[in-house]
Every structure is written in structure tokens, then in C-alpha cells.
Image (cartoon, rainbow, N blue to C red):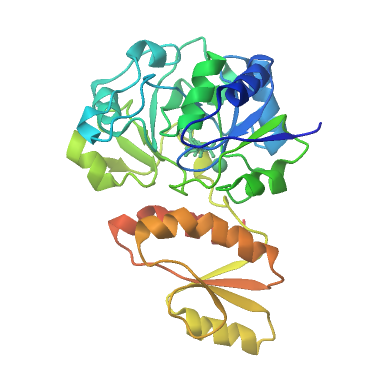
Length: 340
Ligand code: TXA
Ligand code: MG
């Protein structure tokens, strides 16, 4: 199929562009769209056939469940966080069979935003969305294009990141095209994503909230709202976040993570390899990336996409410090470097 690419204003999406994209969703098609984290590949979450298209386009294993995106309030988001309005609970209850107190508190604080909440699912959500599990992951993205699209489609959108399975996530429209051209119906090009890393995923079905995937909303931010947060996937039963597969988000060029990029760079050059480093203030050939965690996150995937297009044998990356504000970046770097 031909992939239609439409430019869209990221702050004030043009209604006719959104209407075209919503028509594709309603017809059961696939639309890639910008969110504040990464580009998503959306389909009608309540249609098993439409969602099956996502798995085909991405080559995604059916054991990996999808996030369902809801639109939230119709008004523009007020700038003061406390004044943020959460989606109508009825919108969430179209897909969730319960909305625990913790979910309500976290949503009131962080939605719309890069936080995904795992809650009990409703029967109306097709099994293909949740990998046949009893829970559904829900998120209200903080991006005008994403929310306008969901609202215009009149249905929640199942949307994984808009890349082939195991490849790097896309933070620019050209990353989506590189991976999915001719495999999806429409791409809304709303420019670069500001956040740059996929949302924080928290399971709120247990006694304590559990972090399944670190993101820009850190554990300490969560704990301020709901007290203790547990880490990691529960050991018993089915994997609670099958997306915790180690190899994920990988460029084709092997990554080498190190505590000392210059020493490693030199060692690899002496072996006759073509090497580039990613970091700041290095000696050898390197691409600059900020030492601020937020700016680093926003630029990481774009930098890796760019370096992956170069003719290099290795990409050397100096690991940022093992501190909470770097947890999401370190998680993604570790997965990107895993070869299995
Ligand atoms: O920022 C994001 O979350 C982006 C944008 C597009 O919203 N989406 C995204 O989707 O990263 P994806 O499919 O690449 O990652 C979804 C993650 C996976 O780790 C998956 O295993 C987990 O969410 N997940 C989805 N449903 C789940 C469920 N019911 N229980 C536990 N984990 C779930
Ligand atoms: Mg993904």
C-alpha cells in the first residue's frame, strides 16, 4: 500500500488533516501520529481486525500487548499542573473495568502526559490488544495532534511505537517512514517529539503500584503521589509486561556501552574498526549529546538513527550516571545494546 504523508501543525492541528486521518482509523486503517514521547502507530482499539494490522505492519509478536490511548478533556491543557483535568472517567471506563484509587490519583497528577496505567480490562477490549491478558494499559497523551485524532475518530486508539518490532523507536516522521513506508496507510508529520522516550508504565492492579517500564516520569515523582512503588515484573504467572524483552529499541550498528568512551573508542579503532562515539566533551570523532537528562532523552533516538545511517562498525556510548533521573535513559541504552 502507498503511505500518504500529511504535514500537520503540532500545536494547532488543521481540522481537515485530522478528519482525513480519523476517516482512515474509522475504516480500520493504520495511522502513525506524533505524541509527546515517540510517534505511535494507531488503530481503532475496539476492532480486533484493525489492531491485527498493527501486528502485521510491525512484525510484532502477539504476546506483546498494546497501550490504549484516550483523548482527555476537549479544552487546551492549562499550563498549571494542578489545574490539569483528567479524561472523563467514562472515557477510561470504555476500556477499563475498574479505575483504582491509585490510578485516579496518578492520572489527576500526570495526565495528559507520558504515564501509562495498567488496570483491569473490560470485555469490549479485544484480546489481541492485551495479549489475552486480564489487564489493559491506558494512557492519555499530551500532544494536540494525538488527542485531536482520538477525539475525531470517536474511539480509543491502540498504539505502539511506530517502528518495526525490535528497531529503534521513532521521534521524527522520517524515522517512521524509514521503518514502515508502504506498510501503513497514513503518517501525520507533526515534527519532532519533545520527550523522546516511551512512557513510564505502571501496573496499579496490585496492592502497591509497580513500575514496569521506566520513563520520564520517575519513581520519585510517582512516589510523591502514591507512596511506595515496587520495581520490576512480578515473578509469578504470565509476564506482566512482555515488552520487557531485553533486546528492544536497537539500531543495526552494534552499540558499546562503557564507563570511558575515549579509551574504548581508541581500543576499537586500533582493531581497525570504524567507530563513532555519542557523548559530550570527548576526544575522538563523536556526536554531541547533552549532559542534561531531559535533553539527552529528547535527542537520544534521533542521534542513534543518524549514527546508524553512517558507515560505522561500532557506536560507543559512555553510560550516564546510575542515578534516578537517568534511569529511563540507562534502561533504553541497555536494551539498545543487547544483541539477543
Ligand atoms: O510512549 C509510549 O508509551 C508510546 C507512545 C506511542 O504512546 N507507546 C509505546 O508502546 O511505547 P509500545 O507498544 O512500544 O510499548 C508498550 C509497553 C510494552 O512494554 C508492553 O509490554 C506494555 O506497554 N504493556 C502494554 N499492555 C500491557 C499490560 N496489559 N500489562 C503490562 N504491560 C503492558
Ligand atoms: Mg515500542
